[in-house]
Structure formats: C-alpha cells, structure tokens
Length: 210
Image (tube, one colour):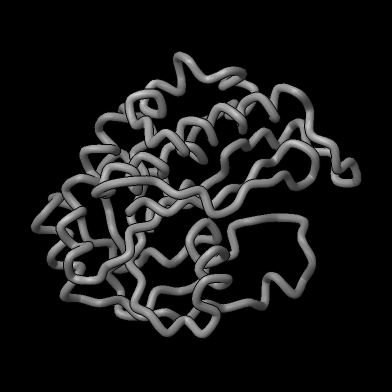
C-alpha cells in the first residue's frame, strides 16, 4: 500500500510485526478515533521488497488513515498481511512508475499492490452540504476517466503538464502520486470500478490495473 500520508525523502516500509493504527486526521467524530486496523506484516514480503527496491525498514511506523481506511472497506477483518510504503512526493511520476514496475513481480505471488489517494483533493474548496461539483472538478475527473478507459499511461504520467485544472484538483499532489505506483505494477489493462464526488469537489475513484 502506497499512501499519500507518509512522505519521506527515501523509500521506507512498515517493518513491525503489528503496526499501530495512526489516527492522523482532525475534527472528525470521536468514533473514528476508536477504530483500529490490527493487520499483521508479512516479514517474507518485507524482505522481498527490500531486495527489489532497496527500501529502508521502519520498525516504528504504523498504518496511517490513507492506508487503513480503504483497507477497512476492502478487508474489514484485517485478515490479510499489510505492508505500507512511504511516498517520495519530490520525485518524478516516472520514478514512482518505475517503483511500481520493480514491485510488479510480487503480483505473481498473489501480492496486491495498491495506491491510495484521490482523483481530486482540494480541501480549500470543500462544501460539506453542497453535492454539486464545480466544473473544474468535473473536467478533471472526465479527463482522468478517459485516460483510464484508454489505458493511456503516457497521458497519465504527464498529468501535471496537460490535465485540465491540475493545480485546482491538486494544490499539492501527494494524493495523486500513489496512482503511479499501482499503474507501474500493471501488466495489461486498467478497469474503472467506481467514480463519483463527495463534499462537492472531492472525486473518489477505484481503478483495477490488471
């Protein structure tokens, strides 16, 4: 799992046998701060990732909400091992894509490689009670969906330069970049599983890379 909420200068991964659940958000209902995601780490896969990528083991890092909140929906019993990777948001899309390519051979062993984030993530333009997205957000999501449906990796890699309203969609792009890790691990095609807006301009999508 590559999450936007763990940014480091070098590549790191969770190495504790039972990483803690990190509640790295503010102002939400108390029940969310009571939620735990007690997944375990597969030390064998940790060693494989270190061998493939040169990542540094971090025995103290837990799962942040960019990792455990989507996993809670996918695997609510936390019954699969989870390893979280840090994000090098200062690096190029091509670097992150190449990282995914290095991890791709783990897929043959049944390892699921996930990039967590958002299609749009402009927290300054949230309107909690307004369900209608702005045109800039619709245009960006339409662009994204078109590129996914065409499996156009080159277009997606050039999002910063060519995507409509990229700076509105991502004032900072850490919530966009994990896409490239998952995309780089892809073998064949992309399939759009879900699209839609929450809180006016936050676009959430699910894509499976085969």
